[in-house]
Length: 181
Image (cartoon, rainbow, N blue to C red; front, side, top):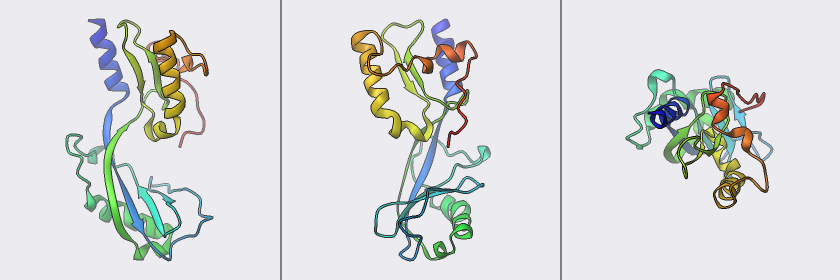
């Protein structure tokens, strides 16, 4: 019924994908003052600590989406799609070495690129905290506190996150954010 329709809407609005993140080592790479880099192609890179390590990756084309049932890292994706784009931007990366990598799930709210937080409109005791894309780690402390308050106290106490409720999607009222990276 309606509950199934809401869950189908969530899986449509927040499809699950898998992504690969590569840790590369390049002793002659950019220094500590290097900003987070996002190339027009979608390749990103940021320095990781002091030892010439960097974290990098990119989203695949829609036709290249990895199978979500397999979280094995695709090292060919790095070789074929990521490396040459990095080296184009940072020539020292011609000499980089991949030191480790991981794969994980990526959830992205296609409706307005913001998280969905709150109580299911029809199912008691079902709460949402999904669709944060790469911002989940940054936003998780505040979201965790807010959802705990919602569950324990019946409402938000510390920070009002009601604007992120599922109702905005059902009512076709997106949150307009101009600087989502």
